Amino acid sequence: MGIIVGNWKMNGNKNFASEMIRRLNGIDSENTIVICPPSPLLYMFNEFKYSVGAQDCFYQASGAFTGENSPILLKEMGCEYVIIGHSERRSLFLESDDLIYKKWEAAVSCGLIPIVCIGECASERKIWKDVLCTQLERYIGKNFCKTIFAYEPVWSIGTGIIPTVKDIEEVSAFIKYVLGSSSEYSILYGGSVNARNVSQILACNNIDGVLVGGASLKAEEFVNIIKNCR
Ligand code: PGA
Image (cartoon, rainbow, N blue to C red; front, side, top):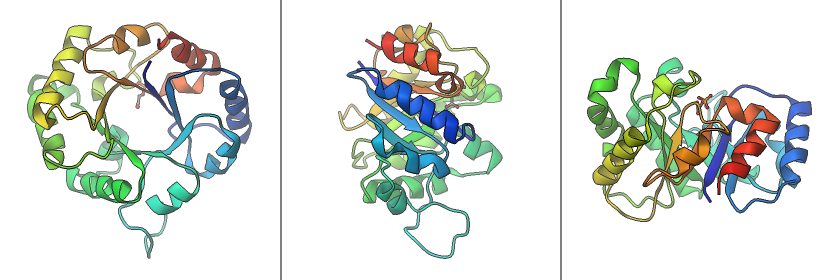
């Protein structure tokens, strides 16, 4: 049993969303399943049997911030979760750890469950501990309010390359070491998760679920990921 988050990124359309909702509504699973579609499709998820999340939010509730999404409004639209600090936000939109932390505070204060993404890029593989420490330091000693931390090594996203079980366990143990062993947060693994590798990943110590990108866009594959999460 685990948490399975599907991040559609900027993919999908109305037809795709209605087909995925129909497929997923047709399966029974005790896993926590969260779909994060592009925001314009959120309204279609009213009849969705599982949970919905946003892919990002702003840190203010309202105001003159053209193009941004209010966390309160996302909640009103039915979101229970929000992804924050995805590596694409960090690299393409230059989001800093400070900004990401402010978004975390805003999400928590309006009752959204934040999924905070962390992870080193290819050039940082030797210094992954330093990278994770910097990305996590603002959260140390805070009230996690069910926060989910998603470890996503950037070199694994969309590449088909995943770390070994030993490496994932080393990282998840390190995250626990940095944040403490409170039961108030969960840890996901993300990066090239598919129906074949998911059960091995979920069997890792301290891993509570997976964040799935590309494979969440293929109905059959995503359904098999859910089925293989036992
Ligand atoms: P991927 O993406 O599953 O396609 O590697 C994961 C992510 O970016 O969250």
